[in-house]
Length: 286
Image 1 (spheres, rainbow, N blue to C red):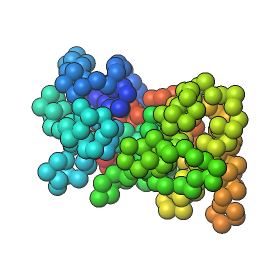
Image 2 (cartoon, rainbow, N blue to C red):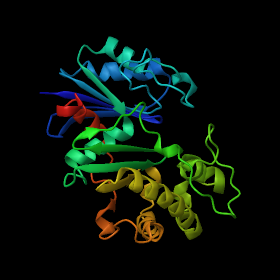
Image 3 (cartoon, rainbow, N blue to C red):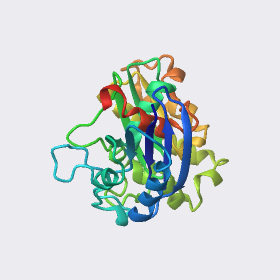
Image 4 (cartoon, rainbow, N blue to C red):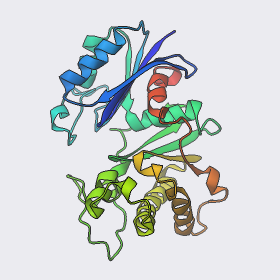
């Protein structure tokens, strides 16, 4: 049985065909442009494969409330060409198979839960720190969707008193995404993250803000594992810094023993999103 998957990111689309045990058989990647051009490429790729279902992990915000008149629409995205675009409707027009839609970060969380670094737990929080910041949560094999999907990248953390950076979020200024995402780092320092590797002050501040967010997520969701992914987390020196600051902020109130196995990197070599998109069609998420 062949299953299709789409990791619909704000920067790039990944389309793949795989099976129910996580094997990827065919895959393509292309930049995200306007909806018509992008989805034409999606349609062309899947026209060469006889898939039985299609799972989609989309950038957001996206309306996931099935009773809503705008179910499946991209909502207030800063990508203006996609704003209020009926993503699910167009995909249904183009592909005559059942389609399951979720967020890209929920898909990544599910991929790591089924096939990667969270196979050993019932609950996992996946946080991506890259072009934006977002998080997906899986409990007992099912992704979490509330009234709308969670927007954990837009929480507010305490800025340091000497931090005068106004933030980069067009909606909230200095929310977590506005001060700790890749574009925020570039705007703050005038260089992309990969050119700041040897500046320890950059990563100490970044770890501080990420750790604050993680403590809030821990206290609210109590996940059994937290996975930190995304382009900014390619700076592997962040992991021990974040763990250290989480222990300090927890201050003994919640269990932080064995933290090296609690806050971890993804295991699926940047395929957690596309494998999770395929997995959305399987079992309790169908």
